[in-house]
Length: 148
Image (cartoon, rainbow, N blue to C red):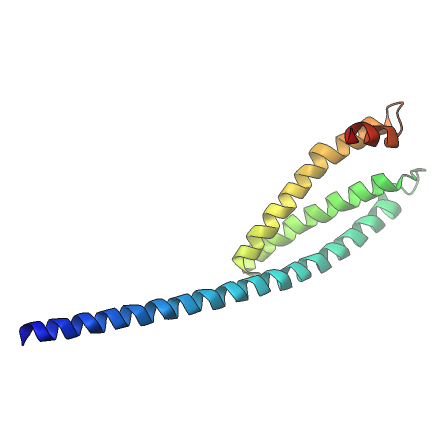
């Protein structure tokens, strides 16, 4: 009689654990699907704001910084606007962290993406452009050298 109760209790615990694990697995799968959809929607929101930041940076560069100079190099304007956009994105992500606006994983992903893009721009693109701009080689010769 005593052992019968223990076996029934053991059977109940096994069923309960099995049901709990299935429920947890279903919840994890649902959360995983929601997280991937939130990453897409959060990315769309950040891309939209980055386009706005890029346009603002372009207008600021053309009308305020270099209105008196004859700077006609579009690549310089592009580099400035991309760096301005990434800087504004950092500021935006800090604000989103304070107010807890986007999903945490999405903020984390976009923070690292923006950080690595900014580092790439500052460490690779800007020095490469400066070296090409002030060298005697043209840009296509440098790209042909890098391609070999």
